[in-house]
Amino acid sequence: MIPFIRLELADESIELANNVLKSGQLAQGKYVDELEYKFAEYCGVSHAVAVSSGTAALHLALLALGIKEGDEVITTPFTFGSTASSILMCGARPVFVDIEEDTFLMNPELIEDKVTYRSGAIIPVDIFGRLADYDRINEFALDHDLKVVEDACQAVGAMSDGNRAGTFGDIGVFSLYATKNLCAGEGGIIVTDDERLADRFRILRNHGQAGRERYDYQELGYNYRLTDLSAAVALPQLETIEEMNQKRLENAEFYNEALAGINGLKLPGIDEKRSVFHLYTMRVTEEFRMNRDELKDHLAVEGIETAVYYPKPLHLYPLYRKFGYKEGDFPVAEKACAEVLSLPIHPLLKREDLEKVVQTISSI
Ligand SMILES: *Cc1c(COP(=O)(O)O)cnc(C)c1O
Image 1 (spheres, rainbow, N blue to C red):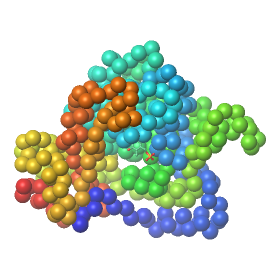
Image 2: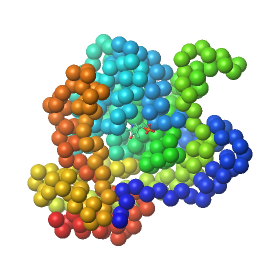
Image 3: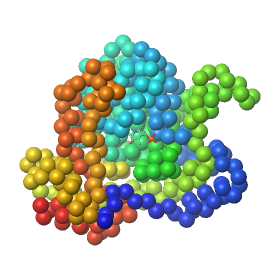
Image 4: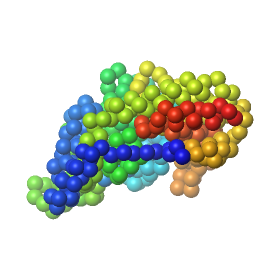
């Protein structure tokens, strides 16, 4: 069986986690501080604030920008649920923009149509580990006085022109969920160069205690803190993340070469921006011998686990249909959901695993 995701923690993670357990100090502490410091350095930003999840990170990012009831936030429907539910958490309205056919990324050309006087922010998503088109999105945001929150939950370490994922908007958000390229089980990190925003995140993650004294509740805050145990698990991974991301890229290159020319499969492109291939997602089009679901089942029988990211665009779920969205609103995202299939890409795959995947697909 070739698993879709596999993780082997380094001894150092286990050792640090042990230190936390032995110390008896299980809440936010020195390992969270160290993770924040080292993660900021890794991303090349002034501030990193650790929180309890990527979703909490998105929520606080929008809150700190002042997004509130009556506002609109522009994002893509082809993403994980909390990219958009974080908008709902602020009482604001999610306004979706369709994606590009080839990259699955938000299509910058379509943003203009969606801007109103209520628009407050854009959340582009670096989907599957690939950076969105920030040159165009930022230019547009500047012209229309919108803030940009980069959902980099899948893209830790991705790069363009020497800049890391998370640094392309006003705020970048990351997830440390168990399956992400850098993981703690649960957790998240918010990055920014704006000290005022970073201070806001620290207050909001800690019950809104804003004063020097404890229990000085000045505004509505949350308990979105990360535990030291989680930070201990994630911290040593910063030493190996480059190597792990490089393996993912090499695995993607292997697939792209070995699966090229198979009629009906559309493989993910690799461009000059460095994708970190959180997922390797191809399209199974009408011209292929099987449809997507048949191929998925066939591979499962052959012992190869695959996954569908995402089976349905967000606007077609009841939570978002309430806003009047319906089938046909975002045709590119809808078609993608019918065709996408993600192959195992994790760094622990062996050459023979990759070959088996390729052979099984080729022989169809
Ligand atoms: C994982 C993920 C999130 C949410 O992260 P959690 O840590 O699970 O809350 C948000 N957006 C995207 C694109 C993600 O992949």
